[in-house]
Every structure is written in structure tokens, then in C-alpha cells.
Image 1 (cartoon, rainbow, N blue to C red):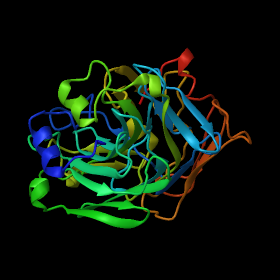
Image 2: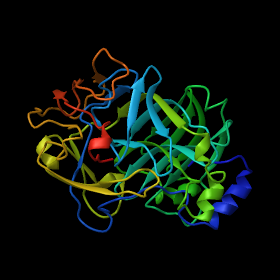
Image 3: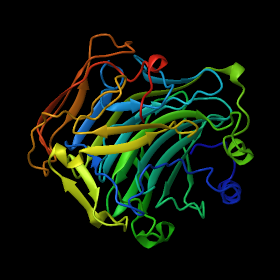
Length: 374
């Protein structure tokens, strides 16, 4: 998560005494504890969402009460008053790969901007920024929700992340995890690293990508969270805006679905499905990153959404094919109006587990009149 400027030793000491303030992961069905439905996968090896153009939100859903604006700055996650925590999440999972997010973090004491990868068995990889510190970013990871220690957090210098667009990347394989800023590797964790308990707590199961802006120093947060976030939020100094220009995702194992073969939580147990029908029923609750609102949604069949305000990530007439291609690209294309807050776009992907065209109608943005999943 993102943080106020203080020494790493002090931060670790604080976090150690305040369990769970740094872990934001939630799950509806933990496959290490019981049998769970297969997850919908990204059937292409590459996906691009350019939020400076309308329609790029077609494979994302939003948390309840989330409103996102779009324009030349990209997707704008605004906190204007108490209780807001705009958050979006991919409709699909990836299984190892790379995520590049080009963004500006939000300013403001107590405000936290987040890039989170999360899995059903509570593996998690994070970039986080504290609004009171315009010179650092935090990298962190968890395995199987292990928050018994907080020695995995590292603070990195970065030039004015609230004023300058930087690209923050997570390059994730079964052998190592890397964090990069503007293409430069700043941290590497090996699978067998002691910090990952020699692989036991290494993130290794299919993940969704979540982006959000939340008030760690807002009313209702516990004292430890408020201190970690830099103090109480003064909402009169808002609005506090996190800007996301582009998200690029590489999926090393394209598939229409991912299923846990046992309860080990090991990457070796994951089964890839090449047909959309392999993930026929999906149930999940979607929450803002601050995790104060949960919205349950049950999806049946290959169509992804049962809520008219959210958008389908996969279509029932998607044909199946090979799951081994690594040259395909998915990209969102929208209307000519970059400032549109609702959109009707066409998203295409070629190769991967399928060759498909996904038509989208409506937008997850209009949360004032509907709820969304994240």
C-alpha cells in the first residue's frame, strides 16, 4: 500500500504491530479450503486499455458507487467526499505475465492510490502510494494471505509520482517477481527467496488486476491504518485524483479459464481451459480497495455479467482454439469522444485460447444509477 515518508524500519515496526493494515485482498471462494468454480481467463496473450479513448473500460467492472471520468488524462479516480473509494478490476484473470500501468498517484494526506494483483487463494502483489509523500512508492507481496510479518515491503524513490506520469510494472513468472519503474528493474524476488518462505508464500496463482483510490485516513479506519496512510484526510482540500492513462497486460498462459486442481495453492496445480464453457459458473463479491462495501454477483454461463450496468468480458459465441500463442493482442477501441463517461466499443483479441470479437454496450461508469462488480 502507499505510505507516508518514514523510515523502512519504523514502517515495518508499525505494520508488525497492526495486523492486516497492509493486505487488501479479499476472496469469495478460497480454493485452498474448498472446491471453487473455475475463473474466467484472458484468452489472449496481450491486452491493452488506453483510457484516453472511450471504450477502453469494456473488460473492467467497478465497485459499488464508483464513478470514473475519462479524458485526455485517462481514467480519473476521484475522491471528493467522505465515503468514496473509486475502484475497478479486470473481468478476467491472468496466470503469470506482466502488468504495466501508466499513471499519476493522488495527492492528499491520508489518501492511498493502489495497483493490486490478487488471486482467489489470497496471493497478492502491490504497488501503493501515500498521498502525503510525493517522492516514494511502495512495493509489496503476500502469499496465501500471510500477514504474520511485514518485512516484505520496500520503499522506492520516484520523481514526483503525483505530478508526473510514470509506468509501474509487475513482471511475474513462476521463477521470480520483478517490480519496474519506467522500464528499469528496481526489485526482484526469487521464488525461493526467504521473504517468500522459499516458495510457500510466493504469489503463484491466477490473478485479477485492481486499480483504486481510497482514504486510508478516512473516518472509520482503525488508528494503525490512519497512521500508515499519513494521517486523517482533510476532505475540504479535495478533490483527490488518481489518473490512469494506460494499462498493458501480458498473459503468459492464455486460456479461457483457470481451475485449481487441488488445495495446495501451487501453480503446478492450475488447469487451463480452452473453451468458454469451462468457466460456466462464477460467483464473487467485488469491493473497493478499502473494502467497506461488498457486492455479490453470480454469473451463470459464458456471458460474464448479470448486471445491466456492467460489461461482458467474454461472449457466448467465442470460438475455441489453441492456448499457446504469444503474439496476439487485445485492445479496446471506442468512440471519438475521449471525455465520454459511457461508451459502446469493440474489443478484439486474436490468437491465444481463442480468436474472438467481444461487443460491449453501456458502461460500468454510471454507478449513480447502478451497481458494479469489481
